[in-house]
Length: 171
Ligand code: FES
Image (cartoon, rainbow, N blue to C red; front, side, top):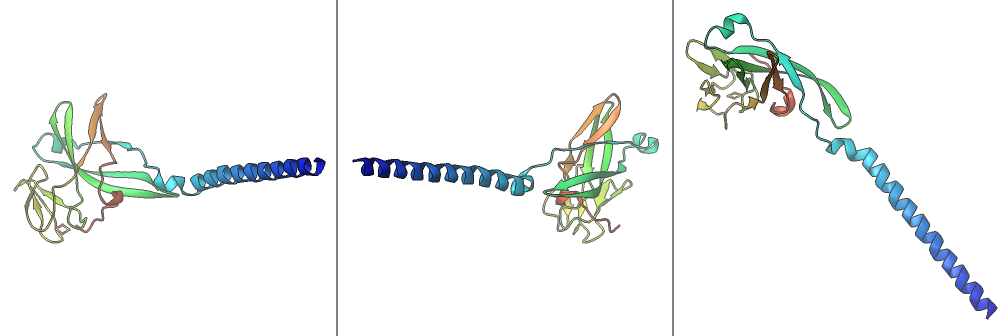
């Protein structure tokens, strides 16, 4: 009887130790996994970047070309990103900002104020002043940056920048 009771107690202790060890393994494994791969799933918040329009551009119906430079996090990596946009004031408190990255292969489009079109130098893609495709290979319109005006300052968001925010300039 005493032998059977010892066996039961031993079995109970064994099961308890396995259960505690298993729980510790699962909890620490989950924590390590989260630490190791968590950053690669984290979506970076938009950065708001202040831009200035030159006076000449504001006084005519054209666009100002602005450069956006910022630090971009991609998983574990932080790199400098640089991209371009065309910004136009449409009302005293409203601007539109069109990404300069062509939606075909990412070349930088130029604004032709005389013809009122955006032109891509790489494969002759043409866009209207709203960024809609007129002709050529671009599969869709130029992207828009979110914009806001705070105390007269013009801010553009980086989160709508296509191709990871690294449009390449060939113009
Ligand atoms: Fe612009 Fe091809 S990259 S048309």
